[in-house]
Length: 293
Image 1 (cartoon, rainbow, N blue to C red):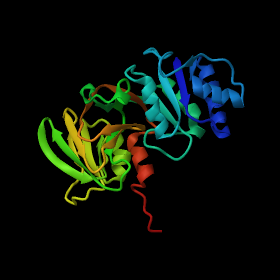
Image 2: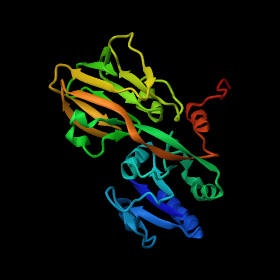
Image 3: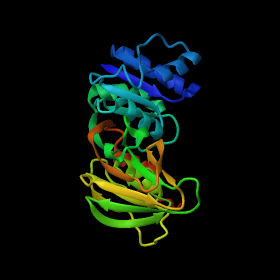
Image 4: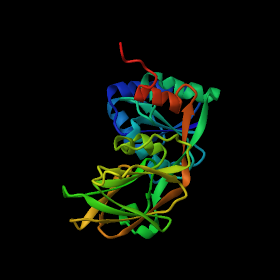
């Protein structure tokens, strides 16, 4: 078994979990690789031994069986920029509050290996969205995709922006709002949900258009087919606005056309039998619980 390990921070309680994971992996004679920055954080606190490292540009290949992300959902979003189109299955060990992507509790970290070895999991392919090259946004030349959402929003102003929206070259509407979210099914439980968007199962072949604080009160989230090409053009009082791909942000001139479509590859997520998407929904949204007492 070949395993990559990644994280952004390393508190003492996280370090203990990493040591447990390493012990379990050693029992399986696994090949273990650490992300360079994360490894340096760990070694500054405790010597866990020598391991090969990887970066966002080298060290990973399609032969890896698992990519373990320590952190929250935001850490997994960053993990996708390492995995890209290599097809390495990702699993998240949550070191804080329960997330929709990072679902394994750090106290159960040994199960990440045990249940993988026993085959108690499925691989769920998550679709992504991308800003097409014809949009010509320099910041997104190489990393032009997002697992959760692509968002256009206002910048340096309290005034709303107008987002002219076309779907497959047909005019839809012009949203007068703080911005517009184009979310994947995975992203339906993220920013889009907080703005009133629907929850969609991860395997649904859909995208969601969710306006952010729209002034035109009849504007509602819209679910569309994921083979739709979306064309946006922003206008407003300022000369520029923001475009974000998950946590990566660029400033774009108003009036520039932005083309968004489904990415040509998927991200594989390991869904353990004991930590299913529906179980996470129930736990996170408190579904099925009687709170009257």
